[in-house]
Image 1 (cartoon, rainbow, N blue to C red):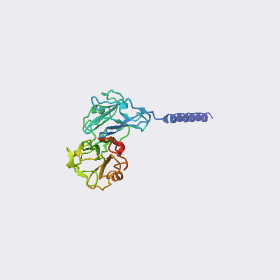
Image 2 (image 1 turned 120 degrees about the vertical axis):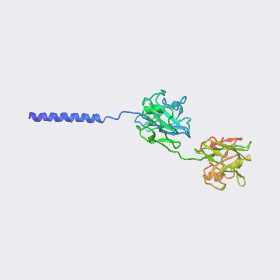
Image 3 (image 1 turned 90 degrees about the horizontal axis):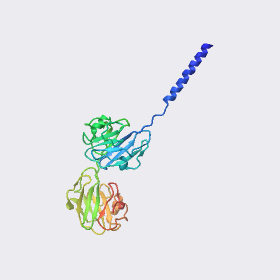
Image 4 (image 1 turned 135 degrees about the vertical axis):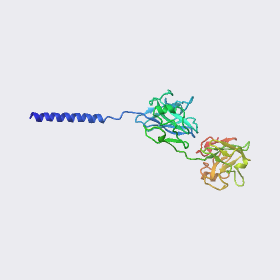
Length: 313
């Protein structure tokens, strides 16, 4: 009987220990915040941060570093809340070099640090040996000083919270040619065209059209080069009336409603100008009755995707 009782006590003790072990192993995962650079778009001058951790973190007092004199505080350049819940992101606006750049993310303004708790993340694109890449390699935040992301902006991170280096970044560049009318001056008879795309485009073979029988090829009326790099403009001169519908066409198919042919349009001085109905069908103007009012010059204040009278002043 004593032996049976002893065996019972041993069994109960073993069960008790096993229960405690199970309880210990089921403790919740420790809270962590893992803030990473998610994307870099040197064309739009935007950097995106993402919280890949499992707890909320405020990144307002974090810093970017892009070289001497270029270390903005995140809270000063953020668009939206800097209080990031897990999987939440925030966009930062900062002037970037399109050709090449090294971008570091720090928890403090100790920009010479190689502590991975301070130097959180790094990317270099366009060329090797960018700013402080040595520090990033020492901190384990980049793989090699000679490795960089090429192929054109935007650049996108494809890895997980604990993956660092060039192998987890890729170029998501897509060629874009977006030519827009950005100014109309009836006093000087000048119209300004701008390249809002990310590659060069020659507008010399494009056409200006103000209505039936009232058109001219851009190369014949341009003042300066018609080969426009991104963000470059050219002025064209043509006799303008007090009320006009101004259209830019890729070819001389002036009856087209194809948005790849009718590239841009604006009307000023009055509603229902020539070809406005085509422009509305092509998605290049908002309404036949909407026109830019007031005195010339008229200036476009939108971006590549903005269409209609709202974006003119």
